[in-house]
Amino acid sequence: MSDILGEQHAAVSQSDYERLLAVRTRLRRFERWSADQAAAHGLTSSQHQLLLAIRGHQDAAGPTIGQAADYLLIRHHSAVELADRTEKSGLIDRVRDSQDHRVVRLHLTAAGEQILSALTGAHVEELRRLTPLFQSMIGELKAD
Image: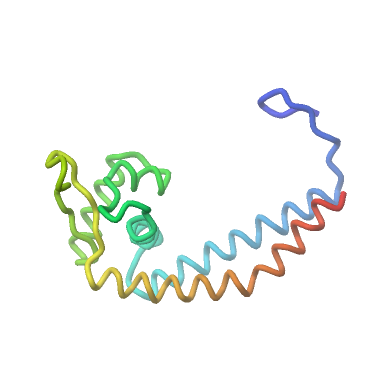
């Protein structure tokens, strides 16, 4: 059997389908849990992801809208709309780049930092809890 790139793959067994279903279901449950956590803090899942993209960006100057769009896998105009809504909520600010004033960078406000810190703590804890489960699932896939 070959994939869309024409690479050959071994035949797929019933247990492969079952394991893949288990992994994808667990990932979707985590995503649902994450969205519920964001909602409990008054955010959409996309707003939470934007805050994380800003805080997790390696350049201390902050990401541009385009970079944030890349992190969130959305189009530039959608990132602009998301940033507008999140800025109106008082969670982020737009700041002109000190080197190139044509460039606008995104920064967290104190309120955004506080909410993101609480959410990140809960997410890290949940991922630590799930790590053995995912390791087991992936180990089963490797075993075949």
